[in-house]
Image 1 (spheres, rainbow, N blue to C red):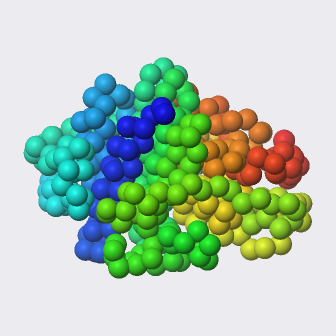
Image 2 (tube, rainbow, N blue to C red):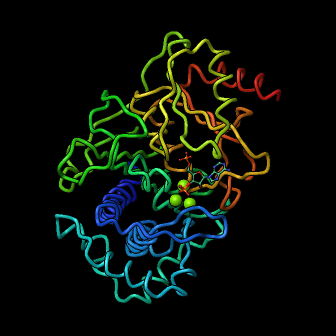
Image 3 (cartoon, rainbow, N blue to C red):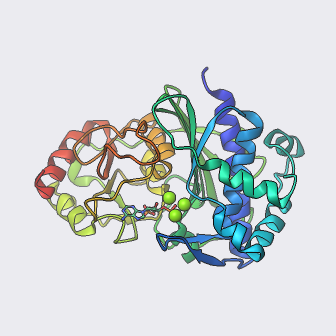
Length: 352
Ligand SMILES: Nc1ncnc2c1ncn2[C@@H]1O[C@H](COP(=O)(O)O)[C@@H](OP(=O)(O)O)[C@H]1O
Ligand SMILES: [Mg+2]
Ligand SMILES: [Mg+2]
Ligand SMILES: [Mg+2]
């Protein structure tokens, strides 16, 4: 089977990084600084990025990495840098052997900054490129709601592997979910799921807790015989997707159930496990280009669970254009059998 080692390393690296994000949350070390785009970025984002890039570098030294964060702010803010350095040194999986596979402790604070900056690849159509979002749904994370640690492997422009850790999603596929499910310390709750997929091999999920790597099970979207019975998954942040347009699409399709609102790629994961059916991300700003790290892992997990992921025109997401999905607008994900109907409704509502 192809890409088994990549999936294994991606799962372990995501699992270890989520431990760091949970620690940051519960230590209330939620310091935020503003990036140029004013989005909140936390100690958790930088720390998780350092740990995951370290694992990729150790195991696949020739691969490129497109990651969301970069270390320039940390080079100017020594206190913030020192705080992240303290945290990353502390994070270990229960199983020492797995930690060794991921690369053991980082050499120094300076090398941690260099490792964070190793995620500056321009991306593109050739070669092996990892797309990393160390904390997706930063706003959900700060609220104590849903967020996800997301890692995808793109080879020659095509997503081959995806792994997503969602510490605040319920382990039980059928448990009710919403954006407000509170964060709970790891190991003490029934929350925390690790999703993964390999092209052509299906999608799986397992509890996120350390040591649970053996309990993987296959996941799939649920059948929806009547589209009017479908449930939408959509974002919480009104600035990221047009909620009025989403509602108009729902109305056209005869859907009356309230949407499940979640931050982050937890939306892709939720529809992939049948906790919701259709994910709509209709553009708010015409000129916004979606980032590849916001979609690569979710795209393959949904497609391997029996879904289709396209933009608002019905075109597949194109990961070969660099750091953004420059050739696409918005996202529509649904079970394969429903995708055409959903796209027709989207086109009518958006007058495409
Ligand atoms: N105008 C915009 N339109 C769409 N997505 C946007 C956006 N501004 C920011 N985002 C992205 O939306 C992501 C969160 O998505 P969601 O709303 O589904 O939780 C953010 O990821 P980060 O939280 O990693 O920064 C960010 O990259
Ligand atoms: Mg961000
Ligand atoms: Mg993101
Ligand atoms: Mg992020």
